[in-house]
Image (cartoon, rainbow, N blue to C red):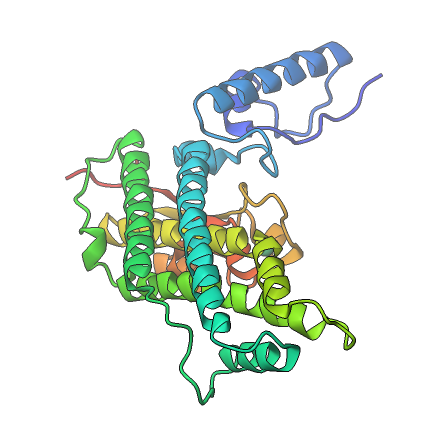
Length: 324
Ligand SMILES: [Zn+2]
């Protein structure tokens, strides 16, 4: 039995041992088994070197191997930053719950009174003052987490460049990069989202309270807000962390020598959508063109999941890049 070996696996590495790989030759079963074993060994060594992750969408492309990207590190940095941001989100949510308890405590414990106030808190044009909640310190902390994630991602790109044989190049401090206002806005959004999450959950509970309700309403809506799923906070934290990581990759790319090759990579996107699966592996002639598709080097602009896209840009400088 002979059949053509499917074109899977990091071909560049296999090419060294099997130079006929791309020539359309046919292999015997034993050759095929040997190839499969080699492929498995390559895959395992790529995992050990933190170049890929166990649940990657596919094997690494040859250009991703040449680019010396350590995708597992990239993934771990983003995941850690997302977890820290999610903890801040949860802290603001608790703070908002306590403040809402005080706010509603000033009202008669009746459905109309509670519902009226909650609707007002959820309206941008409310007559009465909003929740007495000071988010400034939390916004600062989230911004610092985002700046740290940006720095970590930028440092990784420099490490990729040096692994490719380039001399190291200096990075501007994250606090001075053009992406700072964007990250500040993201921090602001995360904090306000956590507070709004509480008030919205409370209003939903008030609206679904039966008309013949005679029980205390205040405790009911506060408990509902407390028990509401925090998945939206985790999701937002992930998006924020990925945006910061993208900003870091962009900062490094713009501050180093112009890459010789630039590729889209959707390796880390566990739920790859159709547009992302099409752009995966796409090559760009210039950094400007690449950044048009991956604004801030974060998510692919056409991704159905928006900032949930775990895509990124991969840079190759290697031998054609003049050393300084
Ligand atoms: Zn996508």
